[in-house]
Image (cartoon, rainbow, N blue to C red):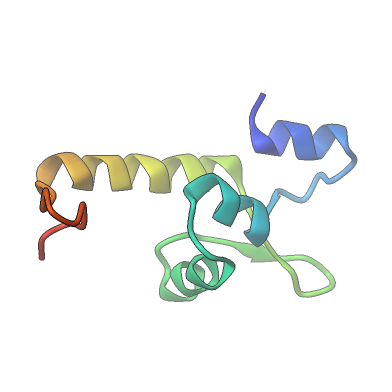
Length: 83
């Protein structure tokens, strides 16, 4: 069951929160907000101004990151992508 499906079961039909996305990706909440501001991850705002993300957007970002990792070898010492 995806995070979005779990959220919907619990009554949240508005998508994934930034915190949920951060947890799935293993990054900080600030990083998710930056990626959203920069257009790397599309979001929409609730009536109260909270960011929400669709499961499709999250899947797209994960696919993009996975392709990038395959295309660009990592530095074995640090695990970071070479620039």
